Image (cartoon, rainbow, N blue to C red; front, side, top):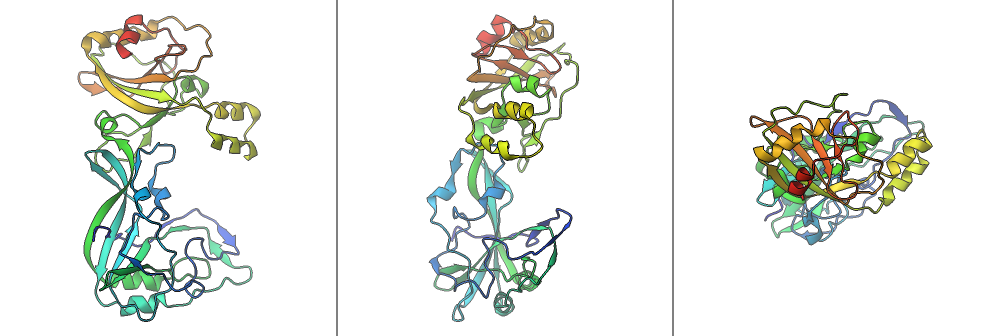
Length: 371
């Protein structure tokens, strides 16, 4: 069977801090006594499209390929039938990443557990507690693994976790799972988030257009996967210094090219209802444009010398034509990439942007090289 695995540590809790009142069960995981009998399917599938894949996808990063679309929907979690005799349990946690020839995928970690299932079946049969009046609960968000059971015939079910009166999973289930023997752990791909070309070139899959560096004063809008080693997570580059950096001695540069969809993101309209955002800030956010990775290249030393003169270039005239293509250049000095990027609009106004500077007029030779 290809869809197997397990998650160390069971449920992960992210503490949000305060106390809430009136906590009840969590959506997606019905109480054991209220849930119907679990529906049997052929085989375990932790890659099903209706499972918790959203927490494994980096928000704002366009996905390239979604393998979950190739899988049928998983059944709703339910109670274990009294005549169901499991020979294996599968604990599926949607964290982690997986690199292959295509690039970097979000992944599900699947742990296979075997042994005596008596304690686990007893724990899963416990009734869920009902919330009492004025129930006080911590506001922890519990990230609960998917739990599958499989019998000797290969039939599988998705088990519901019994809940406390605050909607948290009861500890008996976790204890019973930890007493089983871990026989296999594997990572299965879900969504391709970074293509191999972008990964090899250390390019982010998505970044803000050059004009945003002026609009927001260089507030670190560039998302860039630092190092891009196995398991690395995308990070946000900090705001650049107030003054333009020195580009003296630059002898090379890596180039990431992006294309822009000029259609406004419909989701931004939801900001209209957010309190605390004034009209000016809302207008700026509604006009945000982002580029999607389209290719990569490098500038050799003879072309990189053009970057050293960029800081002294003349200020660009007023222009309101949005670009559909732009490049992010990462200068290098003696084989070391500098922390500051240069952004160049490849069409539209064809301006060059340096941190701590006005929009500038790039050298025509540089534009020709980047086209």
